[in-house]
Amino acid sequence: MPLLSFDDFRAALPAKGGLIGLDPGTKIIGVAATDPERMVASPIEGIKRSKMAADAARIFELYDARNCAALVIGLARNMDGSEGPSAQRARAFARNLLAIRDTPILMWDERMSTAAVTRGMIDHDTSRARRAEIVDQLAAAYVLQGLADRLRAAHSERTS
Image (cartoon, rainbow, N blue to C red; front, side):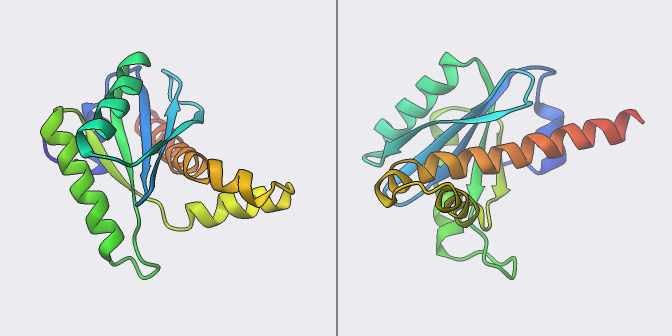
């Protein structure tokens, strides 16, 4: 299965089933998941990057434990919408996951997600050390929640 457009991704999803969101950083892969109804995205963990096989094994362990239906991978676009090296790395990461398991994958724009969650943590007086521990997970949840909201809006548009 190739990387999917939003419409193809939406069409490939069953009525219920959680989603796993990934924020593939260079050192940590932030992981978040939705509930089976795709209403709320929650941070799960940060996977310290190692070999692709080990990273994928942990991702799919979390995916299977939650009976998920698809993966959402944050795509770090530049502010002008173009794709730089980070976006290219995210696409390569997605292709590597597809080589391991054929599952629906959507690349979802993650511009400003890390900045937004960092601002929120600073506003809540979270220590620098604690921010470093959880920023990737929270960024994954932020991106995944945006997609979950968009999926619900698309469903509402289609049924009205």
